[in-house]
Image (tube, rainbow, N blue to C red; front, side):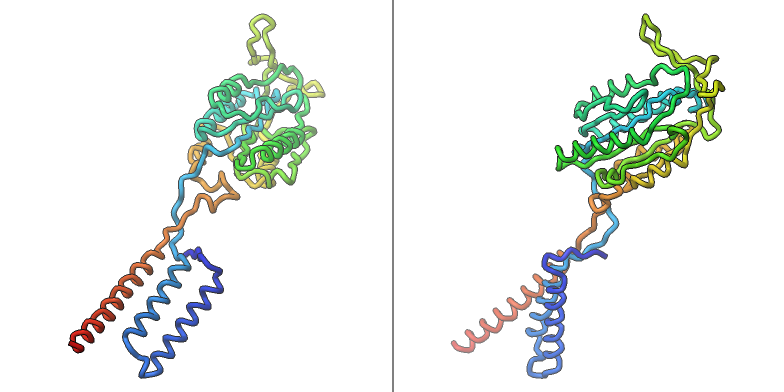
Length: 334
């Protein structure tokens, strides 16, 4: 049951209480206990109840998906070249870019931006409203050349993200912002990922999506052909850590879940094909994607009109009764 009063609630409650008091008074006084008095008080009560705008909650309205700024926050470091997706048959970054393309398709007409981390933190794509250009940018994403495991400062990635989200939010005040963070969670010195506190205030939803396996795997050396500029990931020569040992890259779910919790959005694991990620196909209807805008999705079925119809019926009855008396008096006068 929902109420959406058109006047302050206490005012309507006072009016209803006054109407109820008059009804009791009329019933107590025999001279006033007439059908027309009771009928008119009932009309008043029905009007006041209708002004409360009662309804039944539980429906959902289609959201406006064209008025959004969508920020793709991308871990594009060497560890995303690990081949442990889809039964150890596909690279993390390949699955990640396919997921990004899927999100663009889910939110047509929005604006899209990419903020990335490889050697440095930078904005890979400005906020644009051309989906085809966004898809081209996404298709070009791949890890940079890597032969040694380097520390990835995911905290700095989120700092830049917060800055850009805030700047674009001030520029487009009528647009909501969604954030999608793609990473395996490996951070500098295995430290917790720090999340700017105000980031939660500047977005209305999104998701943190984790790639990789908790057991981890070796990461092939990433090289760029000097002639063709094509990316090559070795299947036999692996990235080494600072101690000279082959680095094993693992999904750090604890860090990613912590980020999701601090931002107030959902975490999804992408260790294998479709693993918990099919839910993203329902983001257009799930309240999870709009964690601070549930009121935009939830609607109620109003039935205040029912009280208005009953009041009109009683009003017509009253009009007919008055008209009948007038006609009778006129007939007697003749």
